[in-house]
Image: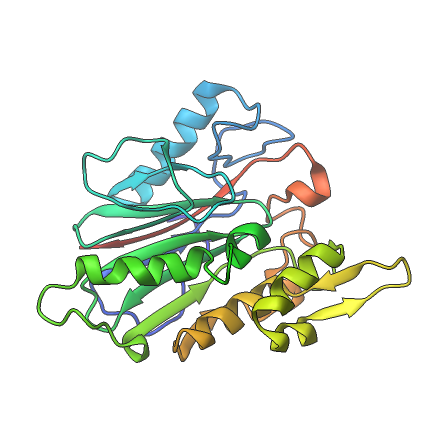
Length: 259
């Protein structure tokens, strides 16, 4: 794989693999340069197809790209799942099928369990993360776990391992009262993850909000993005795509799969 891509440093089982692409290694020209994997952002279709072929060859398995709509729909993948299936989360217990999430500021969350019997991926922008009535994309994925369980239907959250990829950082993600209020209404502890600005807006820590949701679900093994500048998509234009920064932007992909 391209040496610039991010490979999670986490204690996943040896037969579970994951990667998050960067801008590097593709065929697209500016402003989509170079590894744009989004087919909905105005890039040339042939360039996107070539870039997806580069990803597919690099990981050696079948990535399933979703049509993401900032919602909480979760789909179970198989080798026959259609490309472009509408959902913002996916999971599978099938080998060589890569759960794939496209991002350009939103947070990709990759998950597996200590047995590596399933893998999952979530597109966690603020809308999908907060959801409705406390049921966001992460909660919906957890509700889907039982459908994959065969021997022990009650999956222990302590057995789940999560990795958070790059996203818009806490120094760049300016939001209004409605975003802060939606998170705080579900969990007052979220208040600490918003910093007030002189403009009346707030700076939100998206990865921190995801960690809070995962912890509330009982997950203790959370790796990857820690909110530092190195993980911020907005702050690193040469490495990461960012819709908030550029408005016209390509998309990166976070993938997870089993042998």
